[in-house]
Amino acid sequence: MIDKGAVLPLFYLPPVSYFTQLNKHKPDVWMEREEHFPKQTYRNRANIYSPDGILSLVVPVIKGSKNHTKIKDVRISYDFNWQRLHWMSLQACYRRSAYFEFYEDDFAPFYEKKVDYLFDYNQQVLELLLKLVKIKTALKFTESYEAQYPGVADVRESIHPKKGLITDNKPYFQVFEERKGFMPDLSIVDLLFNQGPQAQFYI
Image (cartoon, rainbow, N blue to C red; front, side, top):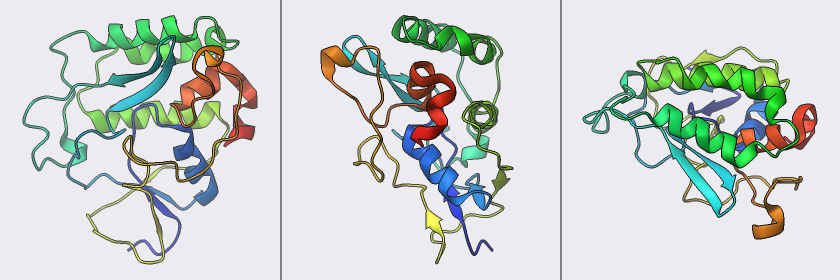
């Protein structure tokens, strides 16, 4: 039974607020791996800043995964080359940013290798991101599903594409902000590619 810290889902290229919560509650941070896969969340999507505004990158999952399948059992679909699309989108959106080339070699392998399960893929991405934003904490995982965790920060549903911010983002320079203004709580890669090693001071 978890009695302190925070329970978070595993997201794909999580938003900045996710790392704010993770940093706030470390080292007592638990990743939810027993929940049923919910639709239209950051578990398989990320928002980045394109010349036209927010662009959502979605990792497709195999049909049937969406209905009462535990998140740890959800398989990624490779019916079309989404990895190439995501990588081209990241390049197009951030090639002009100050630090894209600095981190490019860290991220490229995630758009080349095929990982069967969404949970495993997200975990590998998160371990890289924690290293890049200099958050030192070991990932722990839930062993059973609990609807509620009394006394624990339950962040499983509060960071959501359709909900408002749970923490304020400190503004930072974004490549296209002269077009659309500052866009808060985009994927952590937006912060990393624009601010580089300084990213840790914004979370």
